[in-house]
Image 1 (cartoon, rainbow, N blue to C red):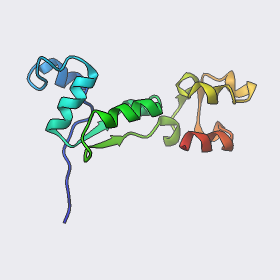
Image 2: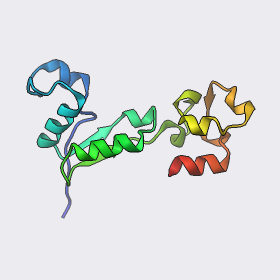
Image 3: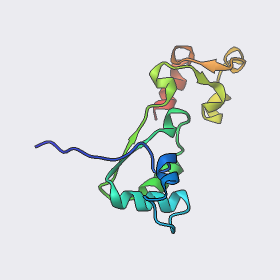
Image 4: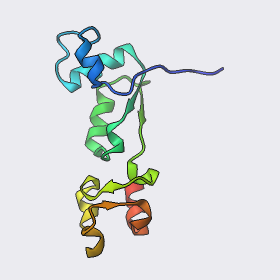
Length: 123
């Protein structure tokens, strides 16, 4: 048997917010919107992870605000998909570990990263 899950690309999608028909008036914060969204759908795409890796705390809070069977379809971080990645979108602690030459670049590619740092990004 195949399970098909239906959701949207974000619980903060501008269309969902501006239409005025999806969220109740009481769902004013991102937290309240995620909680309500998860009562209507059982999956959501996290698009923001393409631009910046979510922190462990953020992931924990997302899980706390949704049900046990809710699924987050997390978009791959752009560095992992071989796209140009602004240096400031890397976690601060990893930026500090880059060689001085890499720290001077505006954008990086996965191939530019030292192996030990790419390993750390995958953790």
